[in-house]
Image 1 (cartoon, rainbow, N blue to C red):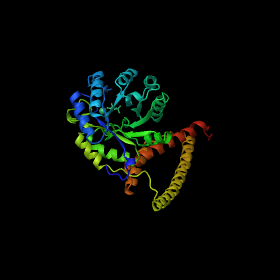
Image 2 (image 1 turned 30 degrees about the vertical axis):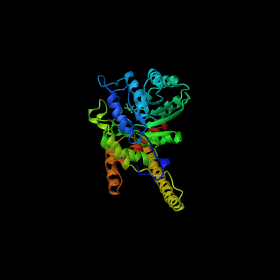
Image 3 (image 1 turned 120 degrees about the vertical axis):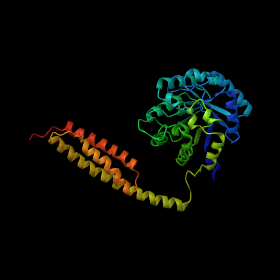
Image 4 (image 1 turned 135 degrees about the vertical axis):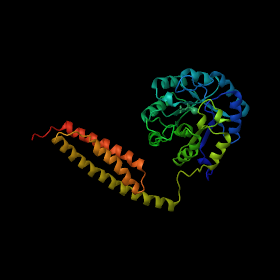
Length: 357
Ligand code: PEP
Ligand code: MN
């Protein structure tokens, strides 16, 4: 990892998706530790989408973890999905735990886990819920924080989407950014393995997370990924992990250099002024929308016009492309603009009485 400041060094958690056997866990943990990583992840109970998949070793893996932890002098973090899991983990002195994406969606379960953790000296990371719902993520973090544990962090593992995407779980970076805005001091860790779903995507996702100021990375690492019993495609070998970490750039969070600060201010002033123009333009567009809404109302015509929308959603990304803007970005932007346009026109149609001819 290339970093000029040691204090900036991200926390790295690595280890297999699932604990599969004592030997697999020991050999993976040994090689991961040789990279200077002291926090090993391992899934003991695996929430799987479909039945008859490998659902984890369960309790027996806790004994392996205990043994390997003492032998190698490393810490382990595991997923808990119920109060019973918490109790078993604590009985084995495992106090670094995470709550999985399928659990964060369920406030009843999260509350039961929080109750089982009441006052315990444990470090808990809460993964984002499967669906892109910031409030649900914040709510789960709040429940665990209210249990007065030692520390509560957040893991960003991406979100399910109905859209076709290269990602297994789309990152929707705006959501963890918003999480940080609500909880500026929370430790935020990126899980590139579950975001990408493919080992070839891990490096780029890690670099992006570090460039966005994340505090750490949790990377699924397996001694023999292709033979893994879960998430085989997205796991890397300890050697691949070593290469990923060696090539990541850790940049400074900010700089005190006066020249840097002055130039940054200058550029930000320009952005402020462009944003004013942008908002004025959106406001002018909205005034047109209001006129169109009234016109449709007066002529008793429906708001949504498929042909017009088809034309807009095709032409605007093309215009944008000719100006070196990403087509998908403009397409998404226009979906939001159009939604607001429909909302405004609905209001005009329903709240104002039709003019009598
Ligand atoms: C995991 O970490 O292996 C896991 C099941 O993750 P998630 O809850 O993010 O799907
Ligand atoms: Mn996994």
